[in-house]
Image (cartoon, rainbow, N blue to C red; front, side, top):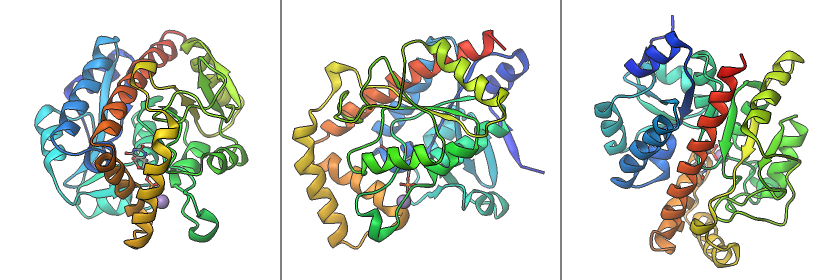
Length: 303
Ligand code: PSU
Ligand code: MN
């Protein structure tokens, strides 16, 4: 038996067959500093409600897998220090031993699928890190997209990653990568990039239809929807490149490895941009929540 707890609004939405959008919690505990993390978590949930869907923030707390958090639980999570970062490898151990942990994209997809939720909004996915040919640091998020049927809306992949290699792995794994409303694969803090996305769609209904067609064809796995950051919030890639290089060099010098790499780089870039990276991050997560809500509504109406 899985110790699983649904929030009141998610429970009601499940019973009524309403549209639900899953949200991850690592972005809260490891991706943004307090108190902005809590403000953003609340804003994103509000954006989803305003769009006519129901938010389900996912986390493990004291051995229970929560699908949807109430405001007390969200606040507690946003304030906690040293919370575990859970991916496919460690989620079961955390639940079985009564632990507390935030879910990454991979773990959130697993939980969303268990709960019958098909759509999930986040900021950026994990990917192939620069220097992966030596470190082998490739996020489990990519393999999860290949096996768990959840459509994930993100703003592309961060330039802290090797984005070209990330796209190669996604192709190898058979994951549809769909840019929304443009040809280029968006570069997280910037809307455009030199890389073309393998697929493009301009309509949330097409994205929902493609998700269902995968399952009809018997294909496992989900889809990655790459939604460009709104133009008024973007930071030019040329401005960020030297900052990312500095952050990467600092991480190497400090000997950061494994799960520590992504949170370290995000925090260092936040410091080096005087918080501007966070402003952009907030704008793009909210934008992704709005698109995910539209997709979730389409999935429901045509079921
Ligand atoms: N990328 C971001 N912000 C984040 C993360 C990635 O721009 O907060 C988090 C997500 O939870 C993602 C995880 O699933 O980091 C990937 O970590 P790793 O590279 O260790 O797999
Ligand atoms: Mn990693």
